[in-house]
Length: 406
Image 1 (cartoon, rainbow, N blue to C red):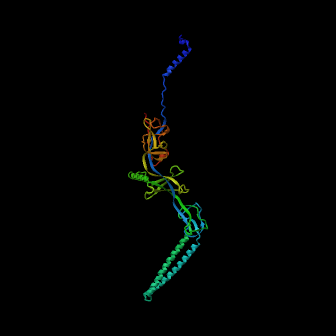
Image 2: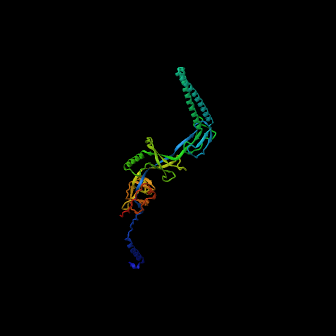
Image 3: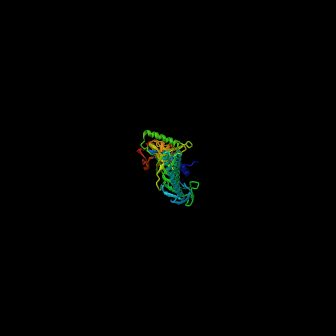
């Protein structure tokens, strides 16, 4: 027997449930693409910058003199404190002078005796000259008196030289500073014998002001400098100075705060190393900041780069191919851009190749930007840091517009 649906409550509930689901079966789940990530972009700063080559080197004192005992004797006095600054001709040491003073006195007495002998032989010679003219003396007597006179002259000359030598040795007993500078510790104490068989080293003086910094340039860098100089000789770049400046920084300093000039370049490239030795000189007044033997950083300007492109250094990435930038095109799509970089100028990196002046570089949100993906770019404020604007011969910052709408 068939039971009507209205009489079966379970069947009614099933039908209602089934019919209630029908409208929901017509709707499908669809993937909604997330919005493009936001990034900050900026056009490269365009300005004139100085092109530098950077090196490492070591400092060395301009003058270094070893103070040595040039005569033998006992050290009598020391007139300086270890590590003190001394001026030229300051008294440093005295070696017992009594023996050398006696030698001077003896040499002076011998010279007086030789002069008396010369005077006597000169009188005898003049007498024989007159007698010979009067035929009262023989030629032999004249020749003998002349020989005695000449021998006495030679004896006087020898005695004069001996006196000078004795006086020089006496002078060596008083030791003075040959240069100004800072003197090290005294290596010999008072009462010790010095100069016995050798020139005993007593102390060392080094002149710290000014101070040298030596560094080497590779053959490739040298050729680059020479090429730049030939180009500047043609265009007569107004930045090119009379004296080539060199800047120096210590390992615990930022930048290159010490300013000097290049004062020496070796005669040629050393074929064994492929480098050429160069030297800068830097003022170093007391209290001395630069000491001999320090490891230093140096940079040498080689010319002025007109309208160089600069981006913040944090915008650069690196991979196996080298340095790269992420650039946003007019469709707001990120492009991978290999670049060749130049020097760092106060946090801004010079881009030598791979970037154009009107392109937009991702400077913030780099981790969210993927090559080939769309982004939502926001323009950063234009303008160079104050430190960059203070560079020599700064050019005008070129204004940039906003990214094009797709």
